[in-house]
Image 1 (cartoon, helix red, strand yellow):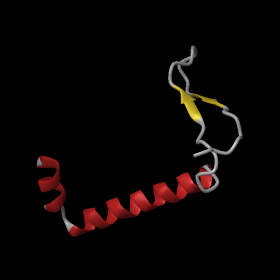
Image 2 (tube, rainbow, N blue to C red):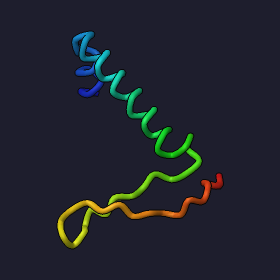
Image 3 (tube, helix red, strand yellow):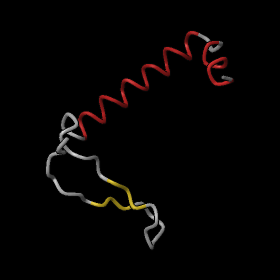
Amino acid sequence: MLDGWLLLNLDIHSKILGITWLIVGVIYLLFLTKGFKQRPHMADLFAKDGAFESKEESEEPINL
């Protein structure tokens, strides 16, 4: 409820920027997953050297 009140009282420029950022993120996700036909790559958050490593998953399409 508090979140909704805060969102409604944001400046119009903040709302436009947030919606734009959301749209850019969805377009990027569409690009990475080839239109949601593949799973996005998973990051290994617990790599031994402390760096993020990408785990390659199978390139099989997602069956729904």
